[in-house]
Length: 83
Image (tube, rainbow, N blue to C red; front, side, top):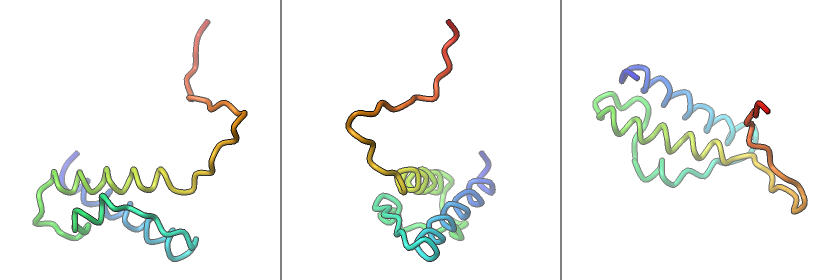
């Protein structure tokens, strides 16, 4: 992915996080992202640091909003098997 595209994705994920905090009253805890001290508009920062920020935000957002599964249920993996 090009740096410009990575900056765009970084910005979009940051907006999703902000939206969840403002509109849904669900603050997304992202300590890995906060530790980086990097914002999407920091164009002078390396591509690798923005990539790390995107992965940190994506993992924080993917873990938010999940409800614990009940003890007796089984989870699906989304795999399709051809028998």
